[in-house]
Amino acid sequence: MLVILLGLAVVVLDSSLLNLALPAIARSFAAPASHTIWVVNAYQIATLVMLLPLAAVGERIGYRNVYLAGMALFALAALGAFFAPSLETLIAARALQGLGAAGVLSVNAALVRFIYPRAHLGRGLALNSAVVAGASVAGPTLAAAILSVGSWPWLLAPNVPLGLLTVWLGRKTLPETPRLAAEPGARAFSALDLVLNMAMFALVFLGADALGVARKDQAGSMLSGALMLGAGLLIGAWHLARQSRKPRPLFPVDLLRIPVFALSMASSVNAFCAQTLAFLALPFLLLETFGRSAIEAGLLLTAWPAAIVTIAPLSGRLIGRYPDGLLGGLGMAVFAAGLWLLALMPAHPSDLDVIWRMALCGAGFALFQSPNNHTIVRSTPVQRSGAGSAMLGTARLTGQTLGAVILATLFAVWPCHDGTAEMVALAGAGLFAAVAGVCSSLRVRQPLH
Image (cartoon, rainbow, N blue to C red; front, side, top):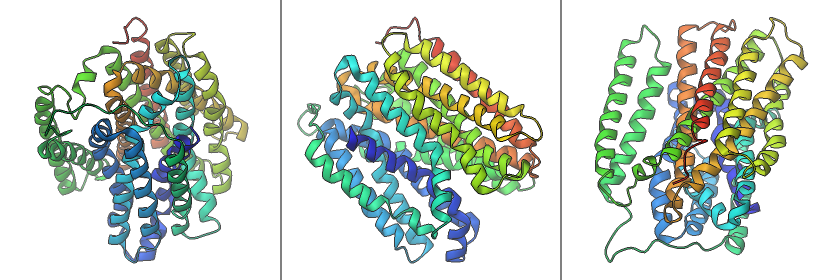
């Protein structure tokens, strides 16, 4: 579990560390911001499009092998990114890092399923959830601390020794897992399956991103974004139609036919959308509207991940004693309440006003995530553990992308950071959390299979 949690922390942290450094990267390479954003996009797209294919590969060659290969590629690509002589090289290295991250994230939960006894699986997933949620929201704070004493390449430097340490420990400790028996000559997926899967996720991501950042007077950008999004949806419809006819589809439509699995995925997407929407808006609110310094804002934001790390182990111990759907619904109710209370903060809040609301959000999310992940893993047939594990990462990245796009759209509507867009974002995040809570509560009477 140390190997699992260490690799997970490194990969999830890396996904958000460079956001804060984009202006410095643009200055370093004398590049426009529109090109620099690909340092982040290349990583996210590579991760998103390869989660499901690498999970399918893991079912055939073993989850352990995919995890270790992914972690090794991630560490070596980080070294290349650290020494990148040009923006193009940096973007290519970040894409390779994203591919390595997909190897880790695609099989992470599947490995946990084979590490923990069935009765204690909830505790293992709770540890996973604490690391994912804590690392997701701690990234900007850690990035600010590193940038206060060093230049942007040092954000990448820890990935190399930590990644190689994870590989070395993993070779000694990670368990071998059952491999899916394949018919002679059969492949995990066809080349067309892979191309359609990549095109679907990439075009939807890029189209939504282009629509989110385009201003109302940029008709060309809005049109290109709409065309990419439409093309991604059409390709996705064709892809899913093809997958629905296969016994072990690359995109697990077979799992989505399980009602409790589908409800859990809907809960996860909405919950991560709410978390991302809020946590990206809060720095603007604290810095631009409330006049906090960067250090003060970072310390205030730390209350959120601190609450997650505190509550997640308790949430894991409650799994099995109470229905997952009930725990998840309660957690999202607390989360939504915290978000709405943040949106209703006074014009000049004290530090305590901010901290207890942040802690409430973190506690609610922690109470939700572990039971939700437990249901996703338990409702997945053992032979499809890889697909279920990859869908955890797919839901998280989809929700995070949706939250970022919504916030970009709000900033385009309200370009002045007077607090209006941020407050609307927090109120909207509360609505997404409420939807996640409803989906979670609907699972209480649903069988696992």
